[in-house]
Amino acid sequence: MRQILDAAAFQKMMISAAASIEIHKQQLNELNVFPVPDGDTGTNMSMTLSAAANDLRKLSAPTLTAAADAAASAMLRGARGNSGVILSLLLRGFAKTLKGMDACDGAQFAFALKGGVEAAYKAVMKPAEGTILTVARVAAQEAEAAAESDPSFEAVIEAAAAASKVALAQTVNQNPVLQKAGVVDAGGKGWMYVLEAMLSVTKGVEIEAPDVMDTAVREQADFSDFNTADITFGYCTEFIVSRENGKAPEALRSFLNGLGDSLVLVDDDEIIKVHVHTNNPGTVLEEAITYGGLVTVKIENMKLQHTEKVMKQEEAPAIAPAQKHYGMVAVCAGAGLSNVFRELGADNMVAGGQTMNPSTQDILEKINATPAEVVFVFPNNKNIIMAAEQTIPLTEKKVIVIPSKTVPQGVSAMLQFDPEAQEQDNIEAMHAAMEQVTTMQVTYAARNSDFDGHSIREGEYLALYGGSLFGSSGDLPGLMQGLADKVKEEGGEFITVYYGQDVSESDAAQVVDIFSKTCPDAEVTLIDGGQPVYYYLISAE
Image (cartoon, rainbow, N blue to C red):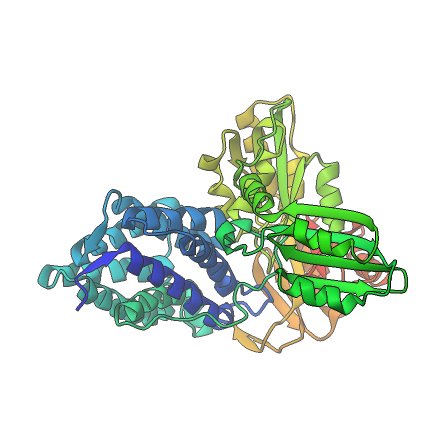
């Protein structure tokens, strides 16, 4: 029975946890109680844990403290969505509790789990029962109880994993929304998978990720994934030689095959063009000129290039010097919505929204690139607010997160911004403006569902009003008419319709016509938002 947790085991456990969440990602996504196409708990948890796994793979013989710190730091910056942020908070508190340790026994591990729970609860403004917080808390409590009779690590992680399973089953009864849908909490199930993965490694079974894991296209390669020692042939040698005699190009190919790798040789009647990696570029060129005169030559030291690229990537991100007091960063998806926020004064945009929550690092980079002392951040999505808030201690700039849950709320808040006003006055004005906005969202049902008395069929148009389900139907004009009637009933005076990338302008004009006829005294505006997923975002004030 394993008595302690050391760094090597912790590395394997976190990598296995990331693999387990990736395997179960879609299952977690589908636990989303709302049948809209944004059930991304599994995706967010997977991407957050993958950030830790990737960094842990790079560590060589760390202490437990160093490994835990590396995981927590990677997850903090890579956290996506509320579930990813809470996951990162659990690891941050865990790592802080283990500070200074080379290894820990079961009792110390249980105390670290408790530290993670306390950190997560402290950061969540209104913690609710029946969530990942509940599952993590119960698991930590049972771990502490188990440690009193058997302080071995294996006994404690076994107790924590078993308790998480029991606690997860109870979430369906603890949260009214989950109870109506008849499902357990997705984030809580994710934490159960994390603990079960740690237990699996303790039993000697590491979990392997599916082949598709971590195959997302990066904007650029991570050169620190490679070591210069892995570069067998150090010089990338390219040249073109003219064909001035009868020597066959195949003879040159055979010669070069013995001097390197990555050989590419093409020829025509006039030239031979060669690319080869070798440690002897001089020898290569000496042979080449026996075929004719050199036309072009390029030799690059690949080890030196690699080192330079790693150093460049490891440089601290640039922080734009302040040229003004206030700056603004907004999160949205769609070229039209980006234009709206830029016209309202946003300095930088973060691409993201439903189904594509940006990470804390994504938001941080835009904050740092904003040439202002104080940066207001507009998440414009309830699932991005926590990730935005995690940037506050990570930058020298003062960050103020305005908790806009929708794009219309963000637009209304920014309209109230006064560059001459005091900071607190701006905050109060923005919050007041958001309270006056009702947001309607029209998308499609991602699956069949029976939610809160509504029978929903996959593929139907689905409308949300103020964050609550309004209705679903295969008749879009009828659904829009119902929304317009509701706006009239509520006395909306200013209505803005943002239409998405899958909607034609002529179809959007018909929606405007419905609202204009139903609310003749209201001012109705149509804007091409270009947003994905949601056919229409509609605001009423």
